[in-house]
Image (cartoon, rainbow, N blue to C red; front, side, top):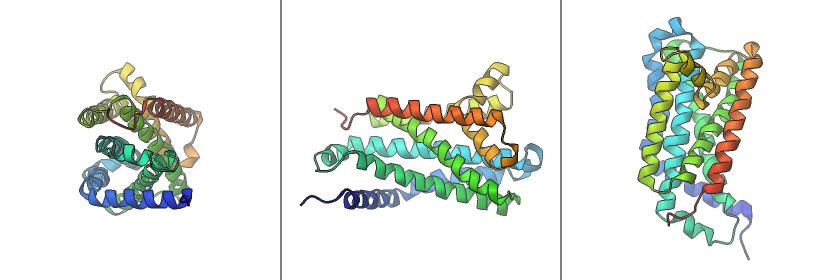
Amino acid sequence: MLPSSTNVFKALFKADLLIQWRNRRAVFMVLLIPVFILFCWKNAVAKIGPYFVLSTCLTLGLISIGLMGYSATISRDRDKGVFQRLRVAPFNPALIMASKLLVQLMMIFVLTILIFVSGYYFDGITISTQGYVVTFFTALIGGAVYLSLGQLITGLITNPESVNGATRMIYFVFIMVGMLGELGTLGDKLKTVSIWSPYGTVKAIISTGMQPGHWDTTSTQALAFCLIYAVVFAGIGIRKFRWAVK
């Protein structure tokens, strides 16, 4: 008798959680780097605003989860032949990816809570109850953008070392061009590019989500761009994805 899809998913999910625990140092780094940045920006809150600080740190954390976390895990498992062995098992291969995505969604949930708690204790930042709720949803949407980007990278690149190199480069570009471009230090053209880039649109919906009363047409457009990015990245990444290196 074949196991049910529910039992298979539970087994895969437990295995993925165990892998996360074994790689807890990397997990802690992904979660703690945005918190560290939030702590370092304590004196800047009054100058650039609490929502700018929180949304920037949360966005950087989401980038880390999608690029440094998800894509690295996928490429490592593929290189070790994990996917190839699992695919011969009598269950839907989609359960494999669903389990890994659920783990990353849990990471996003934990990251969001850490940013909120750290912002309160380090910088005295508080937002409305509605703001907390909306931000959780916008963080999930933003996380979906970067998870789909991670899927795109692993779909186009099979070598794990090349995947790591690509994710680090993209992470650096997003930080430098995104943050500096948003502030206008790189010129008006790059500022516009930054605003409508994955970095800028995700940060925009998170920042506005913290203050729902300020949600406007631009915020809705940013949300639409986020959804488009997620669908396009995921669509290409899934179509190009190979379960084995060779």
